[in-house]
Length: 322
Image 1 (spheres, rainbow, N blue to C red):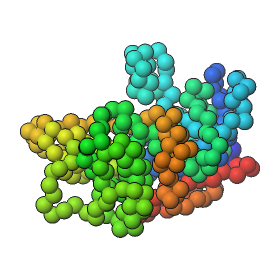
Image 2: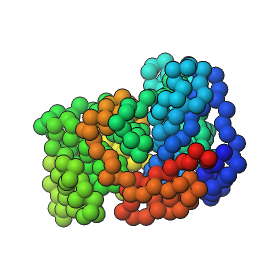
Image 3: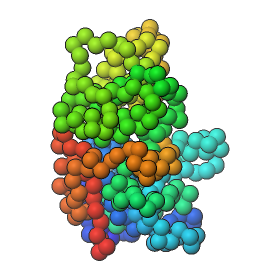
Image 4: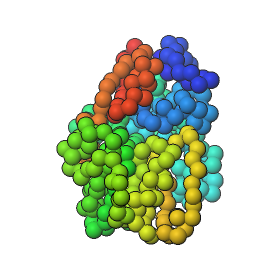
């Protein structure tokens, strides 16, 4: 099958990569579309020391499965493949299974290929009315809904989202559903204009002398300096939510976190059901976030495009022959 393969820090298109074979309880999925996210760009830079087929944001069609009702179903899929038996799994936290594989990120070939496999229990049907290009956003959108599972946000809350990229624009829309006041802070006027069209308040850059009035600051910059910036903007006893995965390292002075009694919440994968409902009901709009679509054969060029400053989502579209 056709695939994008990452090996020794180099990404290349391969026309004859071995097709995965589904194990017991798994489905073989023909990939229709897949999205390039910041984590994929970090993988190329050495994050997780990953080698194989990257990609974890996808929509596809089930072509082989032991349960007949799934055959032909258009699906999105949760990316953590858990053991089901460890302490974390038994506690209902499969995304923290210590033996887990992660689609296209750790020990499991991913979605930048003609086919992938996932456990049937990881699959979610994609409702009619959600296009293939929109369905690719389900996984990162679910990650934004995870914030609502982790913290209680009242309608009176003041929230600042740092970063006007893909994750920031999704996070801002999800947080706005709580009724809270949401401001998106970024560096790109054209992205902030898009955020305003999506119903968000915006501000360009950090004020010279910012007031620390925000109850929650959500870090979506993708920068190693993002946590310190969030710390400077959140009120005492406020909460910082981290949505970025960054391959680089940073040095922090932790004393202000103690003095200001701040809560820091790491936030990763999340629930697919509310993400799919939000897309179906058009409560979250993702179509304007698609910057470009490339064929799988042009995947290397697509990665270069996705890495350009100012780019939002870049997707790969697979052909039936690939």
